[in-house]
Image (cartoon, rainbow, N blue to C red):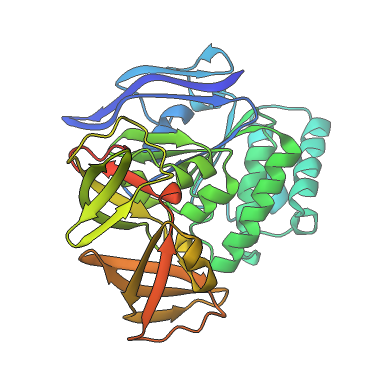
Length: 362
């Protein structure tokens, strides 16, 4: 059952198209993440769902009800913003209960909802404090709690963790995941941080230029990106790309780039390959094998190592292949030195091929 449906949604600011006939269905109880670079339209889409922006065309349906022209307060949503947006003169308790008091709910129900939110978010000891006496993480919990007390079916998050330091972001990310598992509500979450998207989402909608480029599970997007943009956007370091062409040799398809030619055996083509098609071959840094595992890989070559970056748990190694930058992500215990020649291997079954003409997966 769909909880939120967006039908042919468009939004224009004058002559500028921000969202372009966009369609999206979010299942009941799903955690959907809208991911993309700055300016791709992800926060704009969230604000259209929330009713903070009037759409130019299309519909927004929440729980089988057309809410396209309804006020935000009437849509049955709770929203958490990037800024905490707390009332500085009010205690945490009053910040949590303010909207309920304005709505005229009975005092007993207000007390019950505030206590429930405080228990879930573990902020019971902070109820008598004012925002100025709270840390950034505590303030964001209060902001989440203010949405939580509304007791709605759909929660919208607009980059709620981006103002926090790295450790707090990690801690609150885990808490958000636990919160979703406990409540089971529909959640739509906007971020430009791919780690947040991959760890939190049931599905990710990757956006660019007001359009959804791919909507899939985190693993689906990571392992089988639909196009060159998605492949390059997801992953750190980014996927390695080599430009070349498809060559057929008997029953086998090969990738050829200058003096480099290797087999595509094991690769699952998304569309019928054509002889001589200009393509980009992509392989993720963590799918490159070194050491004893090289002999078992269908593609083998040797790299001249230019730079070694120890990252703690693993090591990023920089080199060149087929005229472009080429990176490996290997175990931190691997002994690799600059300027050494390193045998490496990888398999076409873990690769991606994209048309140079339009960037689609082949």
